[in-house]
Image (cartoon, rainbow over all chains, first blue to last red; front, side, top):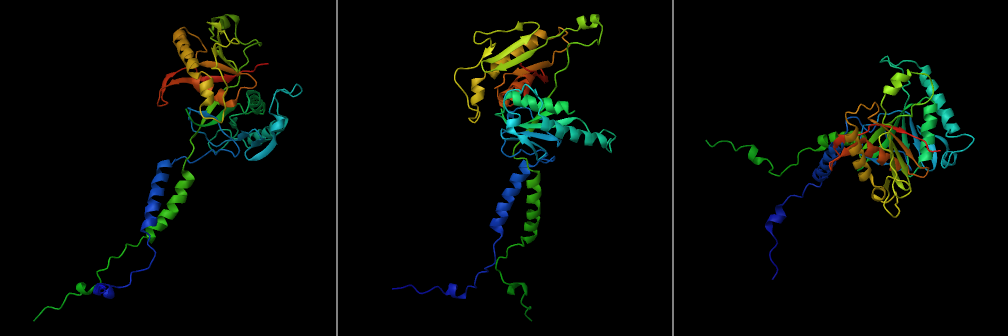
Length: 168
Length: 191
């Protein structure tokens, strides 16, 4: 014999069908906590270039945004501006040009001159500080790396910093 | 006379969720802000010095140059290993291809994590430099914090960077500096 249907159910009001935000709030809270944990007051001042595997290093002095040379095994880029192909600088020293990468030198020299012409900044310091950052691919050979360093120094960028990622 | 029944009792007793929309609006603003400031990959910098012109010119007097006691520490990285050179020990030649600290047999792949660290004996290099730092302490070398690193043409950039870490300091397991070694790094050229 079938049971008699519950009388309580008959009088129960239809449930509110509005969207429940509780689960969404839970997810948002977890994301918020995770992001707060990753928070850096300085922000990401330097971002890793595409197609590049930076070398690992223990030293973690924070990089500040400056003129950046990106030397991958495919191409050479300065501040997101394509300069030349890897064939121009990868490999052994060219007997005619030595360590100089001419296209890179022309670009950096023009950039240095622009900054020198601007004179002093609001803090009284010269805008051109001679600082440059190098993002090199970890697989790049020493001679190619040295060519980039040499060319930058010839263009007046003598304070050279190498960008690395945290490792051990 | 009986009291009037309480109006509150007539209210619906159904549970009502608090209004989350205000908090949600705040979250939607906070999350993009924090995303823009988040640092997912920690990046750092290593400062290098350009080689200084040590020869030629007529700068200081010969007497002052003679008085300047130089260590002239150089570390050469080749495919055979590390070779250390200084004025106190000269070129420290080893049994394999003249490398003071030869690499471990076999090859390495930069795409395999830690592979190059097993091939190149960075710990041995660090230990030798710690011993040298102790040896030169208090001897009045004017360039006691300087080191020049030179590498063979085919040495990868990653090995160079790791060597820079190794010559700079001795670290403990928590990557804290235990002892500062040679912090002024310059690059040399092999021709």
